[in-house]
Amino acid sequence: MKNRIFCLIFVLLCLVGCAALPTGDTPSDDLRAGFLAGADAVTVTDTAVIFTDTSGRERVEIAKAPASTAILYASLTTLWYEAGGVVSGCIGSTSARELYTEVIGRDITLDDGIEVLSTSAAAKNWNLEAMIAASPDLIIVSTAMNGYATVAPAASAAGIPVIAVEYNDFADYLKWFKVFCHLTGHPELWESVALAALDEVMATLAAVPVGDAPSVLALFAGSESLQADTSSTVLGEMLTLVGARNVIGDVGGERVEVNLEQIYAADPDVILILCHGSVEQAAAQVEASVGGNPVWQALRAVQKGNVHYLERGLFHNKPNSRFAEAYEKLTEILYK
View (cartoon, rainbow, N blue to C red):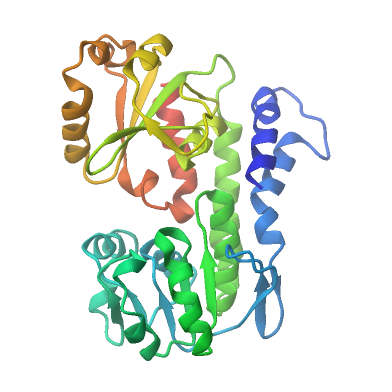
């Protein structure tokens, strides 16, 4: 799906803003269809939702309205709540609780009837016996950090269905929202939330200014290092969709070590900092890694004050229905 979307991006951006697009199958129609491809492949019956999950299973059939659902990845938990559900078990790490508070509006680990199944999202730290003993009717888990590979055998042996999820971009959001809202018994949210978000994203992309594409360096300020995002990351794809040129490009993989000499040669118009923690923590990481380097100080973006720290809730966390807001923010930064 991502390859299809990338193939359409160039054509769309060339034609956005033209006085008249041909009617019928326009590039924007194709981009919309690309966003919806995964969701359109989901089948909903009177009693079940059928789809391909990220484990590679092509026909996963899950009964609607599970009485208890355990979700072992915080961002998937927030998506489940946005889709009208509640959980019986979840991850209760500090970062997860902060995410619940930020996105759901409260720390759900304090809600009655919710069991914290682990204080870590890393599967190597899980107590599988305790998770299975909780006897949920459904387990939803990310493929990240060996989550699905760790829990699936034990859950299968106990007769508990498991959904493996990879959620990286807006197309993934639409697919899994459709699955989740039909499982939770709130299919009306598909139109009022997900399709409304799609309309907003399409409108935002249609308003991208036509002209010279700004060159951008996107950096990820992690807890211990500073890396450059390639075009294969979530942010990298978003930059392409809003007409920017990533100076790192698509060099294989998602992130690469910072090479200041290479970046100096490219001399980007704008530098974006993706924050793993707070803006203050990210700024400290940037300062410690490159701040004192004269090559960094000589970059045009640094000298002109075009270094921007991206809001964690929109760009590091999964923005869910706020994807349009994230695209709009990027557009404002790049074309101000």
